[in-house]
Amino acid sequence: MSGISLGRVTALLLMSRAAGFILTLGNSVILARVLGAERLGEYAYAMGIAALFGLLPNMGISTIVTRAIAQDPVEGQGVFRAALRAQALLAGGIMIFIPAFAALLPEQPVSLLYIGLAATQLAIGTLSWPYLAVLGGRARYDRLAIAELAAGFSGTVFLLAAAIHGGVTAFLTAHVLAAGIALLVARHIAAPFLQTGGSQMMPLGTLFRQGAPFGAGAAVQSLYTRVDILLLGQMATALAVGLYSAAYKPINMAVYFGAAAAGTLFPLMVQAPKGSAPDALVRVMRGAGVAAPAMALLFSGLAAPLLQTLYGEEFAPAASILIGLAWSAAANWLYAPMGVALQARGWEHWWLAGMGGGLVLNFSLNLWSIPRWGAAGAAAATLISEVALLGFATVLILRELSILPFFQPVIGGLAASVAGGGVLWWLLREVGPIPATLGSLVVYGGLLVLFRIITFKNVATAMGWIRQAAMEWPRG
Image 1 (cartoon, one colour):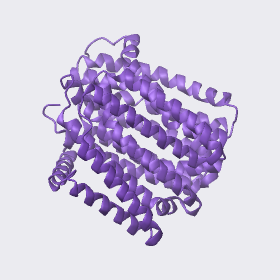
Image 2 (tube, rainbow, N blue to C red):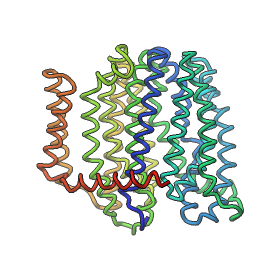
Image 3 (spheres, helix red, strand yellow):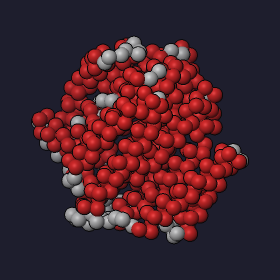
């Protein structure tokens, strides 16, 4: 990473993810408006069951491929070939396992055909992961962005075609076809970076053993983020699942957005001397501390009009759900760079333990809160679990790097967030959502400047990264 600007790389990834965000948001609008709240709940349950195991077939394989290609592109071909074979075996396994798991659950709120189609699109999608890992190992984020955007665009086209029929089966079939196109695109874009020959194929046992800690963490994280949908489907109505799903869509994309920014730290943290904290990590953590509350204030203020504009009047009751999920996403943004740093520095087992604890806490809170408050209870459980993970990550970072706490940014950021939230709560009753949101952001930003947490120089630097990324992307 010594010749690479972390800020420019991060800006490049975020620009591509922003475009993908728009496509995904458009897809969610199509689904909600065509299916309605109840049928959207059936669709969300099927996709949620599959997503419970969405990262299980990774098994840490993508991380191992990326690391091997980055270290030696020629020798890494043996790892890549092993990864292709492993992903094919895992894809076949999840196509069988997911429908079988759904059939064993106490309740069957949707057809097993829906579950089977959701599992199929997941299985096909996993086959593209080794190709994308090669692009990451070569640091070709421009090509990686093209592959992701091409997959997103094809998915939107197939969804539009499915909207003509208008059924859940049609939309799930569209996802299967889009996953196939994404696989072909990833293979085509990665082809110029695949070396012929190279080392012998790594034994599958060695591949799985090296990737096990990363894969276990990914699997637990997948379960952690989807257990609420599973329990809502078992303990609440399809309407509640549909409302929760609608509120979760923009928040889920926001979490993905934050993870993209934190993920660029991984190779840098691997190379940094033990016990030291690179300046880039400190900058990313401070940037997340500034951006996360602003994002939560924005979603909180515009929750009701956003849901009504995107999905229709019947989704307006989901506004309170979205607000709770927005602040849980803010906590996620805050601990994401710490989680990446800990895994890169050999603390992946401790981080796995933290994620496991978060899963148990989230599961327990959902069991208690859903019967009492439905979807709103699930959102509250998510928020509490995310805050607990933030606290756990902070303790581990203190032990490993001794870079926290920064008294002024932490206290100042908390004060600005509370003030912005208070202004938002007061103005929402007086002037409406848009002026209230703008007012809260002005107060929040003004206090950050007053406390010197951000400066105009920081803003100019960030804009410079964006300009560099925008100029580089077209060159491919």
